[in-house]
Figure 1: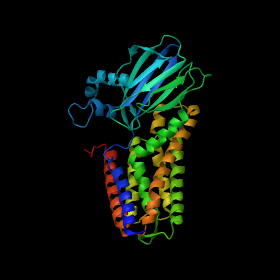
Figure 2 (figure 1 turned 180 degrees about the vertical axis):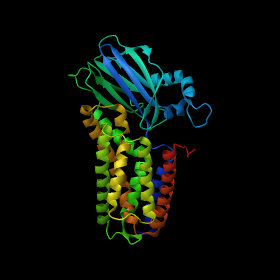
Figure 3 (figure 1 turned 135 degrees about the vertical axis):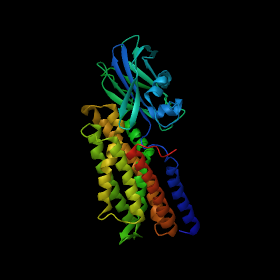
Figure 4 (figure 1 turned 180 degrees about the horizontal axis):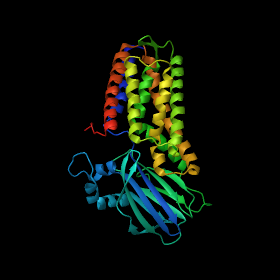
Length: 385
């Protein structure tokens, strides 16, 4: 590889890392809202859980700008929150609008990633619901990463789940159990898994940090380039497999409700995993095969992945397809990262600019970010502006 091509490849790799750093001030958890529609004949009971942090971005709940939301601040803006929810999801049945007949009491709920407003309303339709139409536009103009996760249930409806993309148009669900569903629930959860890995910056940085030195091997207290690209690909396969198996186990346990460790602990451990991996890049200190460390931290990442599925409250019999689809989406997202970064890392593994500019510079920056995350999550502080 000549010098010009080397510099271009290095620049591309650094730009990809810089693209990740651009979003570091955002929280780990991607923006999700949870919509439950309970269908019973001509009546639809709607529950809409929306994160306060997302609502605050659009309608400024924090009136005194002190970084803390009080119940008084939230309650004063409750009518505006109701209007935001009503305009963000439009529900109709068999082509006809259903009429709102009442709203629930003001309520907050604690999800795995923070407090959510719970907005309830009752809809009356002109006839027993046969086809349910949902037009989802919440945060369509303010957050391109936002997704709505809908669960449809009821005496006349086979339980199903789907992922809604704001502004994607009306999604149709056949309510009669024998009519089938037009919503692509399984594919929707595959997309949600890919969306979650892409927007979960700490997961991505953990993987990127591992890939940086997958093209090297330990030599005493330092790193030396591997003899061949094939050796780097084998090491990557071991690391990705260990991470996948580990997080799949805890993802399933957490999503099914078997284990539910405190979110604060989980998020702090995930931040610690990024910090440890980055420091090990700078100076190897973890003994034994690196895949063992990756598997141990992968258990914590699995709990972090489980948030969207936990919040749906899916019962065990309803969990299999969403869990499989979500996990498949996470793995596809990981493979995209590997396919983008590893070939460049293999080509540059002997270059001084890669060792000092990409690995040392990138790992030091990632370690700094991870340390801030640990402080934020461990002590419930808001360090980023």
